[in-house]
Structures are given as C-alpha cells and as structure tokens.
Length: 279
Length: 259
Image (cartoon, rainbow over all chains, first blue to last red):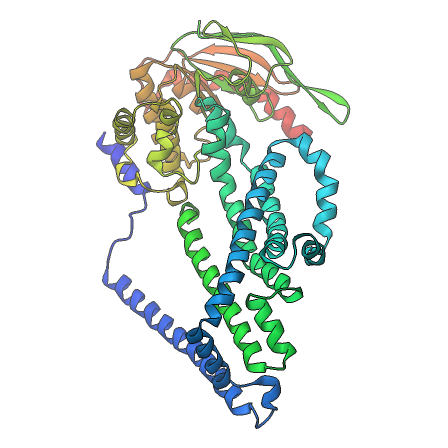
C-alpha cells in the first residue's frame, strides 16, 4: 500500500507551493503590468491632447470639434436628461432585439442541430437569408412596424438570430459522441442527456454566439434609428450631423463606444465564470 | 451466465462494398469472470465490446446479457473507454457523481458514495479540479471511480490504460486487480498488450484480423490474489506469454508484410 501511494505521489503535480522565487516572479510580473497600464493611459491622454491642439490650429473645428466641446456637450446631456432619454430608448431596443433574436436563434439552432432531416430540409433557405445583408431588411421593417421601437427591435433581432442560430447549431453538432454514449450507458434518458451533456457542451458555442451578437444588436438598433426615428442615440447622431453639430455627433459616438465597451466587459467576465472549466 | 455471444457478426458498407469487420463469434462469459480480448488493432475486439454495450447492433446473431437480449444501449454495464469520456465541464467529484445523479440517488447518499470512491482512487485533494487540471493518470482514476460508483454488475473496458506510461499502467492494473478481487464483477477487458491480458485476466480470447474473428481462447491459471508488479517474473506467466505470442505472431507478421 505504501509503495503504491509513493508511485501516485511521484506522478502528481503539487498545486502551487509558495516560495521566494515564485514571489519574486510575481512581483516582476506585477511591475510589468503596471508599466503597460500606465502606457495605455498615456496613449489616450496623448491622443486627446493632440486632438485638442489640432482643433482650429491644424483643422477647422467645424469638422472635428474638440475634446473639451464634446465633453461639455456630454455633460450637458447628462445633466438635462437628454442622454438618459435617448439612451434608454436605444438600450431597450437593443435588449429586446437581443432577447428575441437569441431565443428564436437558440431554439431553431437546437432543433436543426439535433435533427439531420430538419437540417437537410431547411438548409438552402437559411443559407439564402443568411447571405442577405440584414441591414437591408431595415426599410421593410420600418414599413411593417412603423418608426417606433418595434422596427428597431426587429432589425436587431434578425441580426442576432443568425449569429446565435449558427453557433447553437454548430455547438449541438459538435457534441462529442463519446460523451453521449458514456452518459447513455450510465443510465441517462433523452431529457437528462439534453440537460447534462448536450446543453453544457454546446454552451461554449452558444455563449460565443451570444457574445458576438450583443454589439450587433446595438448596431441593428442604431441603424434602425438612423433611418427613421424620433428618439434614441442613433437619432441623436443623425440629427446632430444633419445640423452640422460636430460636437454632438462626436458625443453620440462616444456614448455608443462606452456602452459597447461596457457590455463587452460584462460579457467577458460572465464568460470567464461560465466557461471556467476550459481553463 | 452473464454474457452470451451467439454468432454475433459485424459488416460495414464502404464505397458500395461490404466489409466484414467481425466474423460470427460465439462465446460465453460467466458471471464474475475476468476476460481479456487480445489482438492487434482492426481485429474487431473493440467492435465486439461496442456490441455488448449496445452502441452498435450486430449485423447477424445476438448478444444476451443477464438473460436479456441486448437491443439498444445496454444500461447494465459500466463502460470505460480508451479516450477520455469525462465531461470536461464537471469537476472530478461531479463526474463521479454523474451516474448517481442520473439514477436519482438522494444527495446525502450520493455524496457519501462519492467520498468513498475518491478515497479509493486517492484523489480527495483533487475533488474540485476540472479534468483539464488533472494529469492523464488522475483522469483515468476518476473514470474508474465513476464507473465503479454506480456498481454496474458488468464492466467493459476498452484499452482503458492504453495511453498511460508503463509505470502508471502497472499502478492502474494493480488498482483494478485489487478492486476486482474484492468485488468479483464480470469484466471484459480489451487490450493489445499481451502482458496486460495475462496479468489481469482469467481467460484470454485472442482475435485476429482480416476478417476479425476469434482465433483461440486461453485459460490463465495464475493464482489469485495476484501481485501485478511481480507476476511477470513468474515462470507460468512467461509460458502463457509465449503461448499467446505464438498465437498472435503470424497475424502480426502478416500485417507487417502488408504494410
């Protein structure tokens, strides 16, 4: 028994033991990280400083505005409620479009992934619609659903649908048959197989689809607002540029960039948690 | 009579031609027997195992397991494959608990069982590790614990230790032997390693290729309990090894020439 235990231990890697060398290594890594972060901030500051300097000195401020003017406009929107009013409209359209599109995309992707016959029947139609630029559907949706939030939800849902559908389909197809057989032999019924093997296995794919589609949901909503709308960040940008108000146009773009980055950051953290088994 | 194989055969269609993967096999494996299927790759030994597990149906003949004809997935066996079948998104303990979960065992009972299994394969400290965080040998031990956790009467093992290095393989064989000598489950163990077959089994069924078929059956009369680490220096072990080698040799030479 003792000899056997001895052989085991030789094979095992010990989970990280603290040591002086490891501490020094960690400190060096931390310093390197700090330097990189400082450089990262510096790039932003230099860019803004150059923009401020160039405005009206190198290029007409009419075209490029300036960071101070854009910041002022953002502050004004923030304090008089304009930002919240338009942003809530855009985010609602994005959220609803994302929910609707991903729900339908997941369901159909799952069904076609599990059934070869259904996949064979629907393949050419789905491919044909997939090849269509989804934004081109926006005029149709505005005609159908009007200039309210419904048409923005529809544009955004259609884009999200395809991304989630394709990833779910691939994910369900990608389930390792060894896992399916092994789990069946252990006594799993169809429902258990679905819940314990197919869904978790496809989760990585589905999650990728969801993650990729969130920015597109935002694009869908904003494009809808560009074309025809009376509210939303897209409307704000379109209206400002129509009135040659560069500062407002840039302010609108900054809002979209910040929202997009925030959503992405949240998704990244969620993904790291959900897919932590991939290490 | 645990497993009765009655003229089971397998043919595949490939590019319009029928290929005989396994000629009809008739074989009886008694309750509590440790039987090894030995042969080179492509001899149909894994096909035979998959038919017992009900993963693929025989083209002819039938297999009766515990009095019931195998028709579809066979839930009365535990199956340990050569490739990793652990679910990568489950920790070691959750993988071991999977069959218990599927059978609806109550949580406290299941966790007591999981603890016992982890203890048996000496992986208590690694219970919350995901498969990617475990070494190859540790993954095999989790798979072994998983298959033993729900106590199936029959174990099917398809080269379970094939991917391990020589020393670790011995350790796992010793572990399996100790567990088997205590539980006396029916075991069908597929391998291409003559020494492994002789050391573990009570009976070795030799398969040959083109078409895959059973060439001969050998009783392994080495006494039990066996010491896996020393048994290969035993005179009788060496005799049996030579017998099996001469049974396999012509086939292996033929494959070499063909290649």
